[in-house]
Amino acid sequence: MKIVLADKTIDGLLYVEESSAMLSLDLIKKMQYKIPDEMAMICFTNGKLPQHVTPTIITIGQHGNFIGEMAIKMLVDRLESKTELEFSTKIIKTSLIQRQSTAQVQ
Image 1 (cartoon, rainbow, N blue to C red):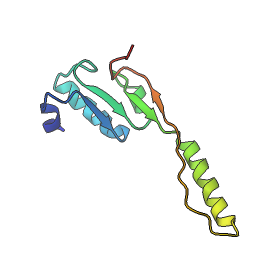
Image 2: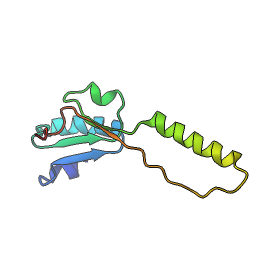
Image 3: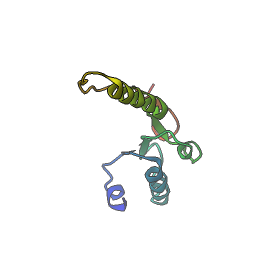
């Protein structure tokens, strides 16, 4: 991560889970980047940790409970079907949880 952060052309990072974001936040602060002015951060999970650090980290809520419900329904429908069902794809909308780790768009 130090190598990535040494590249001054990078002005934002997207994390796939919150523990990576927490570790990077500490390093970003040690390297004296100003968040969000010099480095923006967004994380793909809306857990507890991004809400309780300074600055708070913007997250993308993926609605895990709803995804689980949809997956179970699809599985049960497939298991109970008398005929073979075609595979299907469901698109679940996400939510951007605004906090302090990116510049606010007006």
